[in-house]
Image (cartoon, rainbow, N blue to C red; front, side, top):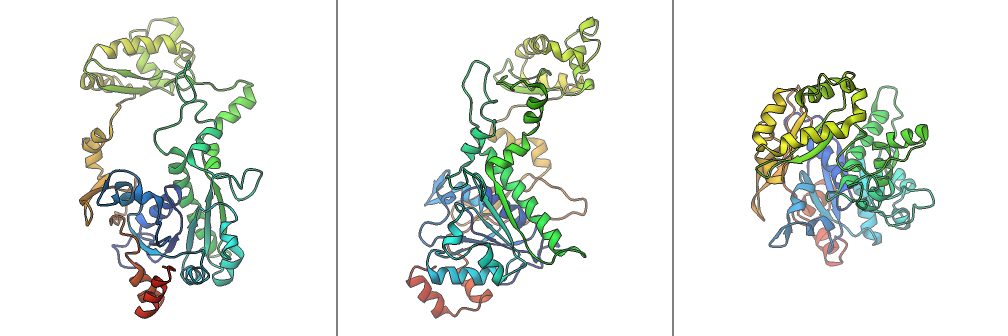
Length: 402
């Protein structure tokens, strides 16, 4: 195997990432680095693999989620619980820049693969450790999932209708935010290692799912401690400012939000309340957000979505359609921005993969390879890169090490 150093000048070419994580947050972090040129080696259990392989629509045993979550990665198998597997893993880590893992805290240490052990083979390694509640603290040993983070962070308590129960999101919000924060944290550690006056050594990053959401929505804690008021479920509203989702006459839905004076003023003018003294100060008008909301909602209900969008956009009101994923994929703006790309795939024939959202003025291109089969790159990584002979690889496979 050759480290990717000739892939169109991608910014992270030459960086080697070992992805020993599973499901969503860790794989997203490693995948985002791979998106921009890093060589990502995905390490999975020889028989179980990553659970993400079995999520989503399946065709001949291949899960659709896997194609996106493992895109741009080389997949190898290795049983880290076996001494020979741990030894093989250390050889991989010795040549890597970043290791991403999300085992329950203490697991790597039990296998002799904790930070101190890995630092002995590679002091430049950046180790990203993702867990539900962090590596330390009273809850650190608990099993942690994004659902629990969404519950504990206050996200679920503030989501839903005022007269309804706390509501969990139908998409992996905590995992998504943690994955992005994980990739950013790795770049911070790499910069600290490699800058002219840097340490020259790697670091250990302790990143939790609940902590990622707590940081992202921490301003609500600040507000509560200043005001003494607990934020509650307000449906689609955000504070008292005009913000909601409404159905249109043709069955489509739209959402709008006005958080600045100019945006509130645009809505006030649109609903014909410019002469109402209560609304002369746009920011003071948020006290009457319910009334403004009702007036605009009534207007929306009487018109088809395209008309609603056309007229509100022309009036300067921040509004957008509420899409299902099919509408999103087919939207002209999404198409123009190339947010998705179609690639050939051995299982589905062709799959559509999401493209990283950053667009660089320098014209950096993205890599695009769908998630491969379990152990597809054992020969390339263990043979070409680590120098194991075919007979050694066969012997490790026979013993269930890989």
